[in-house]
Every structure is written in structure tokens, then in C-alpha cells.
Image (cartoon, rainbow, N blue to C red; front, top):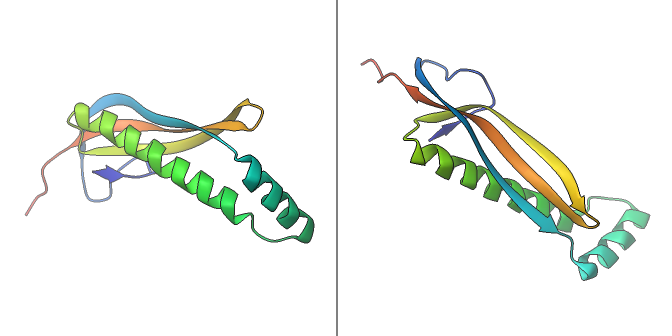
Length: 108
């Protein structure tokens, strides 16, 4: 499945718009992780545990979005975007969304 943040797929014609598809996940921070990352925040540098947490959340949201597109028998998802929102103290949602499309067959 092609997943892109552009409105088109280079070299391919979009023949059908199947509509919006999305995937989301809500993740909570870990108290132990908060303590170690709080110390890192004082000293400076990358908060690696949070980077991993968000990276994992992004991959899960993309996977869920792709699964929804596959149910529609889409060939690609275009114009993909990400949104985050705090849903509770210490918990955040990551949402991936885009437009599922069918593509014309490749010309040979």
C-alpha cells in the first residue's frame, strides 16, 4: 500500500476517491519513565523514552489507517496527516488520517 503526504502518487493516475480513512491510538506516560525523563529534561538532551513512545504510537496509527483502507480495497492513501491531542492528564491521542484512493494500472 502506498502511503504519502502528497495529493497525488507520482507517475500514477487516481481513478477513484474512496473517502477518508483514519487510525488512532491513545497512549499514557509511565510514572517511572516520567521520573527519568524529568531528570533528562533538567540536564538537557533528547527525551528518548518519549521519542520511542510517540514513534510506536505513530506506527500503530498508520497501521490502523492502512487496515481501514485495505477494507475498502484501496491502492494508496494520499494527503496523509497526523494530529495529536491530550485526552487526559498524561494521556495523548495520535491520529493519522488521509484519503483512500484507487489507482489506474501501471502502463508498461
